[in-house]
Length: 340
Figure 1: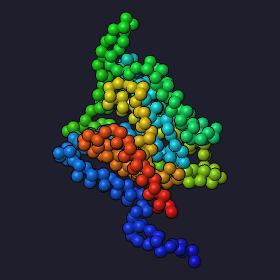
Figure 2: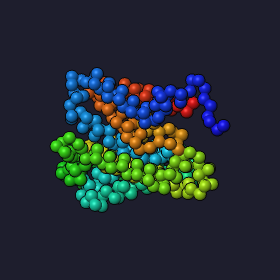
Figure 3: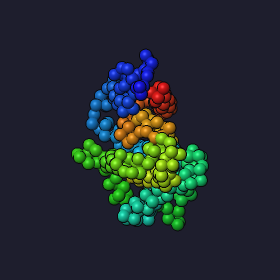
Figure 4: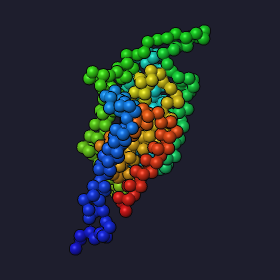
């Protein structure tokens, strides 16, 4: 009597429909299509070289780290527009402390992580504690963090050229922590930044899949009022989600600074949109309550390889941006079709 009645056109009646209804299957299909595109438009065999795949993963790793934090926030039913600006703020701070002040990474790294978590925690407090819309709260943090990055850097890139009081410049060596983060391992076939990304993805997966806090995030994203009535500490859980997003943005900021060997207050502009695109393309719905890091990992690979394929084929950046927009809309439409 309780069996669900479906129409004759229901996707659940066919194996293909059930396969398409699975977000992981759709994400894998998108990745397979992008890889097939690379095999066709291989730029005189450049796509088949190991270095191309290493570089694709390296370029996608910073976006992937941001996307891991964004996944936590989106699952809780929110959004975080500040991650790109927090990345810039941390990149500038990390460069100032490591290059200009010659701080040990034992001190500089925890301080930068705390700065990112603080920015995320403030945005989360505005959202969860003061009931400000996540879009507005994180937009305010995005503007504030970008302005703070420009203030502490004097609007200039923080590089190995240190300005003296008399106006001359001294050039200092690149800090060892920068060289380590930007180095390669396993016979130059894998970058440390990619290893950091995998570590962040594994940690966030464990929190979502094995920790009580992860289950609370899913409950809040599914129905916040029901979660509150069930005893879930909604405010604390949401604040921690935004703080974790800020902390991961700080990790991405330090990786960005190490890769560029400088702290740029303009870095990370638009990165929040790429992170959201990765999460959506992976199959995590913006409505919250569902999704996971595995899907985000697939989305990261899809965007990373798509960017690399377009790059080696010399596709203009404007065309890349338009194509990314089309892909985001297509991903959202497939989610709506599945729910219908």
